[in-house]
Image: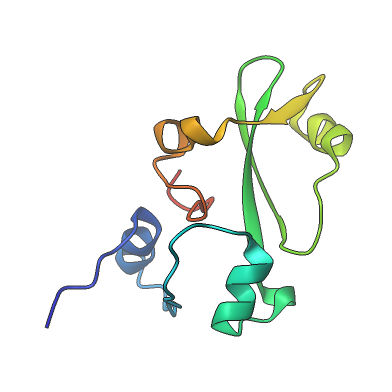
Length: 109
């Protein structure tokens, strides 16, 4: 039997002996969180998206929001103590977070 591939988040949870369940599905290309929840049967109210933003100062911020909601950029900037924030470029996700698009989590960043 092949060894299960683990993410940084899974390894961190394992070290802390936190129980969790993984949901696996085939995905040729990432669509969005709602599509992923529909495929796995996960309830929307228990499904979240992780958005990585860059502030005007150059700092990075991670926001976790329900998959069926939008992030208010003005409120996000205020919460981060920034004048403004914007999404990082898709091409920079792995370099900045260590994760791939569609697989980001605030755990382990």
